[in-house]
Image 1 (cartoon, rainbow, N blue to C red):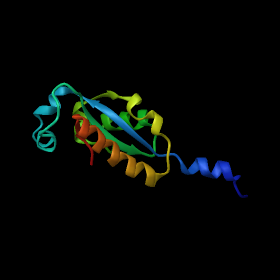
Image 2 (image 1 turned 180 degrees about the vertical axis):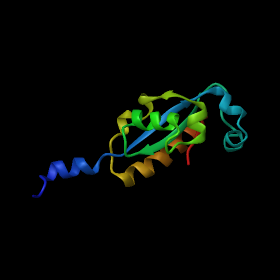
Image 3 (image 1 turned 90 degrees about the vertical axis):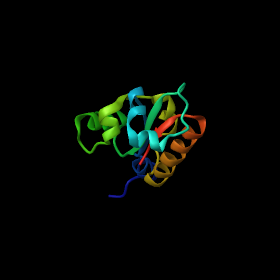
Image 4 (image 1 turned 120 degrees about the vertical axis):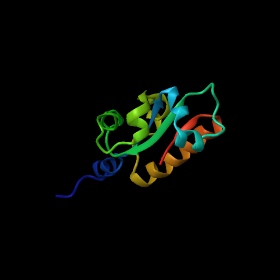
Length: 116
């Protein structure tokens, strides 16, 4: 049975970008510091990611050590929905591009950013 056109379009838009606030002690992490030599001490450090899950579920997986980023597991404090909710959901290709663009934009504003 063929899905209605609108339902099919919405089903394709299930990827999300998300932003996690990192504990300020992440600045002492050698790899993070090397990747962010010019970040402002007045702005928080963040992780920018992409997921096919709800951001809350993805963050919980990071913290539980399931398919996690070492930086988020160790330093992740909380999600920052105002920085990403307005962008979601979107198709995978758009989300992959948005993840990189959002990380670049935040770096340009002076945030310390971890994004892989």
